[in-house]
Amino acid sequence: MHLTINKVLGRYEVYNALYILNQNSSENIDLLDLSKVEVIEPFGMTMLLQLMEIFSVESIILPNANVTTYMIEANFFEFLSHDIKQETSLFPNSNKQFGTPLLGVHYIREKSDSDKALLSLLKQSSSVLKTELGFSDNDVADIISILSELLGNIPRHSQCHGYICGEICANERNKYLSVCISDTGIGIRKSLEPKRKTSQWDDSIALHTAVIEGVTRKQRGGLGFKGIRQKIATFKGNLFVKSGLSEIAVTGNDFFVLNSPYFPGTQLELQLPMKSSI
Amino acid sequence: MIGKTKVIELYNLVDSEILYTRPVGEEVRKKLVAEIHRASENTFIIDFKGIIVIDFSCADEIIAILQQDNKQIGNKRLLLTNLTEHHRENIEIAMKERKQAILTTDGILIGHLPSHLESLLATVIQKKSVTAREIADDSIDALAVASQKLRLLWSKGLAGRFQEKSSEGMQYIYTSLV
Image (cartoon, rainbow over all chains, first blue to last red; front, side, top):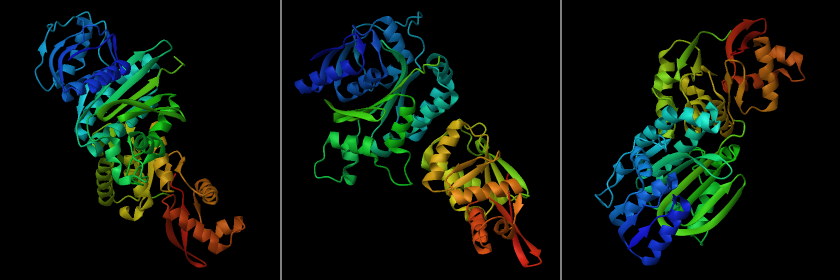
């Protein structure tokens, strides 16, 4: 089948693609057409990699030069697990309209991988976070602390590898930091199976249990999602956690559980808005 | 009054600006304990200079557990210094989870202490050294109660003490750590 991705490769386009792929029950993508893509958000970048791991992609039409250059600089092509026929050739553009990625794609399997990603964010990007988003040194430390705990879930729970990627994005209202962490492991429902307290157990209940009620090993775990949510709330940020057929969106004390198209493993996105004191 | 003091720079023990995960915290704690056992000093100042990030797990393993069970370090005393707001927040959470408290070198208490012990601690810090008799004389507490409270403060690692002969026999002198 042919799969075309439109202008902004973010959550909407990824979910659209997943709906189409699930409906077709196909494991093969004959042609992945990225030629219309003008922007790739972190969620789109990591999910594109994971999609290409799960589905067999025969050939790909790359985006325009600017976007492709950005993907190269974000290390995207380093992690493609197999050769894909390119319908257009890679031609790096020194124009660099997109600038250097804030946090390029990092492969996460073990703690040493997380160390590399976190140190990269700390050493190469913390000044950008301060100037562009008005974050303080304390804020940067808190962000790294949050990400360290979220990344730790991959080797601890997923039984698989994953990826992290981050960038400063913009919408009509504001600029914000977006960081996506994704794996195609066993997912939250299966991971929490031994701790289930109800006979009804599906992705939405498992997500609610993990993210809202909080399930940590008392005095042997980290802050857990509860502590992470509290820290994100101090930023007035959002947290999205998708696993299986469900997604939970958390803003402050509010949360929404939504259906979402099936994809294995767990995908998280952290969004932290610019501080208004800039 | 706090005896000999030694500064331990945490960064030199770990060689990383980012401290996270429980296994890392356990490793650091073991190195810290070994360092403290090797030294002859009574009080150790843990210097956080160079540490950018410490997560809750490491704060718990390195500081809270050690303060809760200071027999691991032969009842020697710990103080913290060069803390950022980030360090303080995560250490505070860890200390409160274990109902423990620790002092910084500028006399700030981090963690949980019941109010009657908090006011007693303030008195010890202000006076630099006290006896149970002095506390009992200045308060409504009986000598036994004052003695117990001071012993509790000492057992929580928030005061030093040494024994001295007095007209009433041997007594403990409780000393401020800051």
